[in-house]
Length: 147
Image 1 (tube, rainbow, N blue to C red):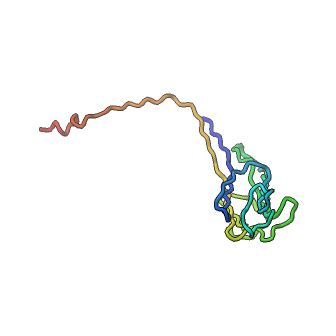
Image 2 (cartoon, rainbow, N blue to C red):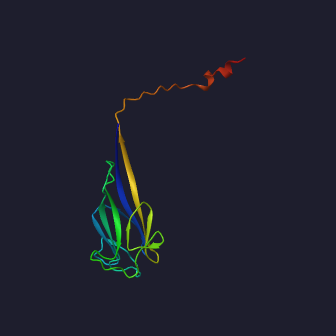
């Protein structure tokens, strides 16, 4: 039996226009109000270049497919911080390595939740399974033969 595990990274954004899901696959994402951002945040309280998501290589993968994670950094890729900063799990932080179900608040009514989804696929050789199904007519039970 062979077991293979891989991960999917998902960011769910809630802003003035509702809820959007972003599967994360690229090495870098810009988040903010600017039209050029990879992930646009629709709110007047968000900076044009509010945050940057960077895919980071893990040091030890242990052979389980856990080969990278995402780090969120306040501000743009050039190091200019946002006006309001980031609140991650209720604490103001300039940088954070994201973990499953981390909540990122960009401003009033603008937040994101990060999900690290485990996709485990099990492939195995199976023999054909045969099922023996016997149908019983209710009139054939022993209860009715007791006279």
